[in-house]
Image (cartoon, rainbow, N blue to C red; front, side, top):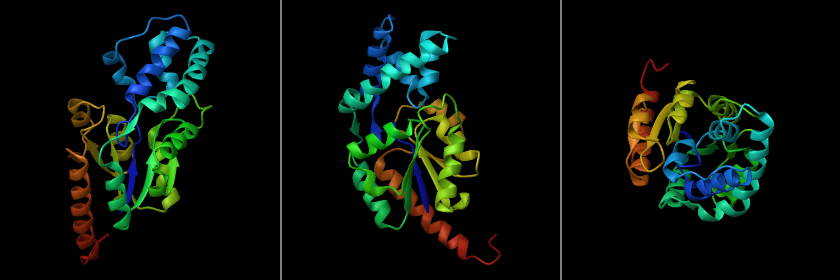
Length: 228
């Protein structure tokens, strides 16, 4: 199977670093910092979307300034407030050893995404990391899923997207990819149910067990007469 993993909220608990970096950015542009509870909804969103919303600004120059202030704050300091979710490295090793191909699909800019993956020593598990170029102001995560499928030469029926937000589920569904929602991330149950995830993984162990079951069932189905 081809496994596509979201980054923030799925592999890495980055919210402490993200929220601190957002508030430092708001202070730097003359705005008041916000309670963490108000910032949780923005994890997994593009920086331009985050700051245009928080600043209430149609002024692209101000938004671009905020984005440029934020980036080094997270990449140099905020990353130190982040951590890999417990059990993730072991799960990735198990999945890799089982013969699955693994890729990261994230809306974090590609440079920052690679930095995070390397910082936590996760690069050994992944064939590729997909993220937008830092100059892109908008984009659809479904395009990144498509890029991952193309790189692996993968059939959508042989692929699982694993993430914690509704955007992950929608991006998978756009290409007929099986979508698994993880419950240890930042998305709410209501959000993920509304997006119609195919499965809810209650824990990292549950995720590995489910992937093993799906793979076994899939192999049986693939070998059945009349498979299309």
